[in-house]
Image 1 (cartoon, one colour):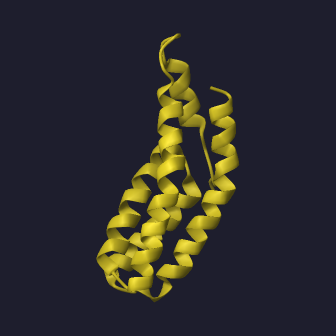
Image 2 (cartoon, helix red, strand yellow):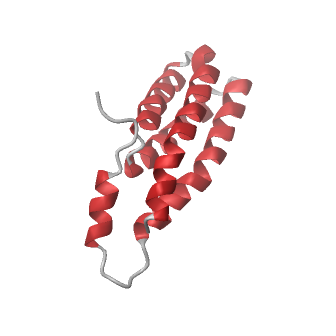
Length: 118
């Protein structure tokens, strides 16, 4: 079983950045932390409306950014949500969105520490 959050790739990337240059890792993480609550709100609205296409599209986008930053728990949940949107089995969508929101709350401190270390 992999860690819910694995920032090792981000730390490796940060080590490769030239000294004195802006921290691209911090920019990516800050964007993730800013945009993910908005993405989750859109997914909640799509689930409440029963819009399987918006569920699938929103989960796909979340899956991408979660994978980029190493938010594995969010990534795995987004994969599941994307699949149920694709298959039209959206009765479980609201529950998966709640799980995504909880996963973000658990991941946030890890990313906050990464930003603090910038």
